Length: 77
Image 1 (cartoon, rainbow, N blue to C red):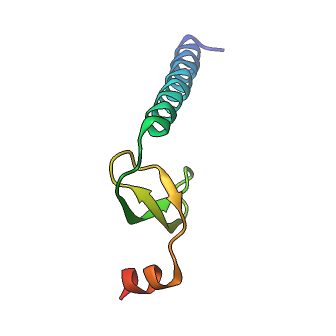
Image 2: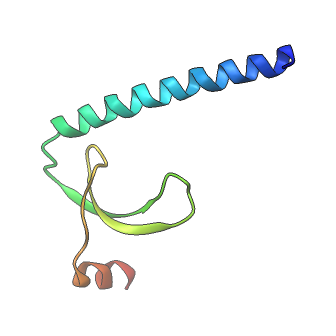
Image 3: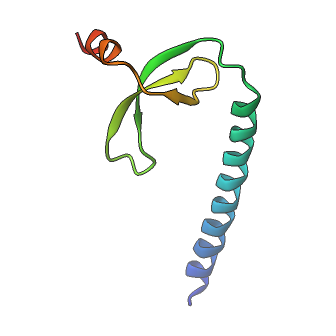
């Protein structure tokens, strides 16, 4: 493996470690949140391929649940 490839591999590994660390920290913040207010939001998957309408907390953006049929109709009308 060339030196440049080794550097890219190390950088990739370090970034993956940071991503996991921040995901855990975000989970902790979201678990501490009381979710006092919610909104409807189109949430995309991590792959970024598609999105679907969900009920999320206004403060921490945690997905709380699924909208009712009426909520869906109101959102798209």
